Amino acid sequence: MTVIYAFQDSNGHWHGDPDAPLLDPADEPSRGTLTYQPVPGTPEAASPFAGQRLTVLYGITDLEAGPVTYQLDTGGRFLATWHIHTLLASPMGTAPLPSDTPPAPAPAPCLESAFTEGGRRYALTGTRCDNGQLTLELTISSERGDIQGELCGAVTADDLEPLARLLDAASHTLTGPAAIPPPRQGGGWAPADSTRLAARFRQERDFTILAAEFGCSRGAIYQELTRQGLIRTPGSGRTTPASRPLSEAMQQRRQIHRNTHTRWSDEEERRLAQRCADGVLTPELSNEFGRTEQAIDSRLLKIGAVGPAADQARLNAL
Image (cartoon, rainbow, N blue to C red):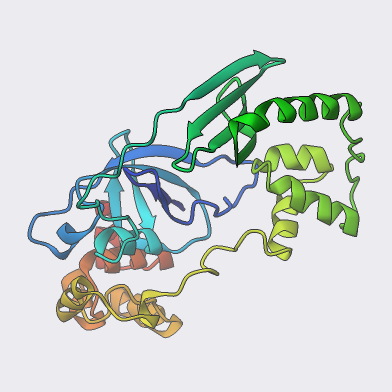
């Protein structure tokens, strides 16, 4: 099922599971835009993301879908994962609140120099510190602006000329880049390959590039990085809302539907399918199971239930 599984807020921070793998490793995540406008007066209106224009990632994953479908500004209607829906619907999101006092303006650089060579741009910026030293930032970027290297430190103005001579001497000493071992050709991961992959992952996050470099599939790269603990499987680094105090908004919602935002057990799904087959309609199922009608519709579709309520759920999803 295609679901929204991550979003970027107006401050540029990502939320949800942006590193979650798609079911097909060859697929790329789709991007869209969502202007989150909850209904005024509802608990969702207190969300820190209310009114924001969000960039969302969506695709086919094995993450559990939540009860609500979101209409994207860029077209398309998709369910969000349970994690994303909880972040959007509750004041417990992680978006930073705006500061009451504006940040102090950054000091103007007193030294700027840059040039482009071999498809790379080298930029040096120096800013005067209160103690008279210079804070130097050297960045190396691609033609697209991707940072490929950086160096930062504080020196005095008298240090610049000796440092220039030192760098010039180093450029003559290093006659060429270290040879890169040939890619792996199947089999398990040798210790040297595992160490080299860990080092490369700190510089390159594109699984396609890493797979080509190491002579294996994107899935093998993902599994090895997971084994080394360099990336987390979806849900491994967060606790469910049931294990922490409920927000005020969630408490209000559960006064209406006692089981909202709780996971379905196998027994509940079996009983829901049976009650639907018996002809019980959605409003009565909502009261019986303590969940919203949208959650009932979503679960009926997921378990492939049959009956009038399931038929209506399929019509609602069109």
